[in-house]
Image (cartoon, rainbow, N blue to C red; front, side, top):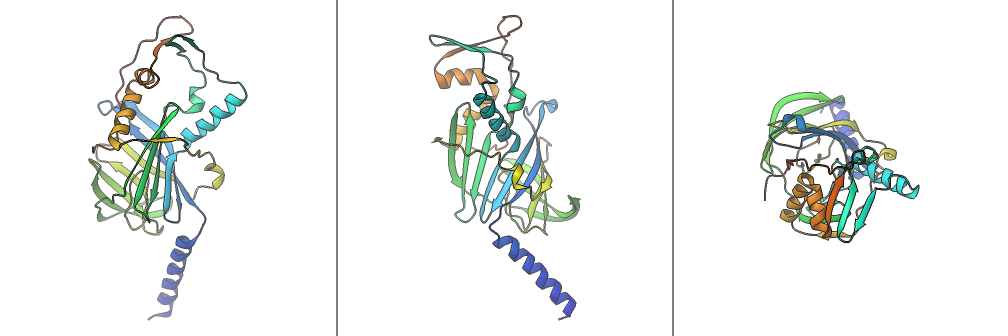
Length: 283
């Protein structure tokens, strides 16, 4: 064997081994765009998601949402941002003009996905109001078709792969030089870290904007406590109901009647019809 080729091969294998054996977490940050209403192209919403990898485990969550949780807790401790809410019997009146909602990122993704690739288990939890719901399921590997096309993302040469997964058709781009078979959301199983994914209808997009994100930017993550375990179907229905009719969801969950008024006029706030476009279309 040519010595130059031999030493190059050894160097690559050593680098891969070093990444695989490290106890330090490898994190990457994705810009996440999703079309909340499948019938309205103008309903697209931006988020920033973090994927943290350590050994055979990954955690995927919204950086902005968890930053918002931290902001809320800080404001509560300082007596800021208290909601203007009055209660009479089982009737609750809520101030409809929350000045702090932007800093709490209340519209961002609340779902947290933890995957143990060694045990092939997925734990999904979601905080809807003050209650956290969750379920556990088996790891599912998409059936990928790897193609020859390549693009460069963050100075990484990425190869194309396509799949039909969870009821949608996706195009992904993975970096062979980063030997992690993981990606955002539930994507996994390619021979390199997935840096970009988009569905064919262009309703969902994940694109990596920062690799090996510093730990200082990931410390906002808050573990959910007191998770109520339910089925996947139940959680999907609850989440859809929550986003489409938040007031109705609050009334059902808490057993109260809620009215929302405008602080400027004192008039009731009319309920807006919304539609929530779930990523996962499977039962």
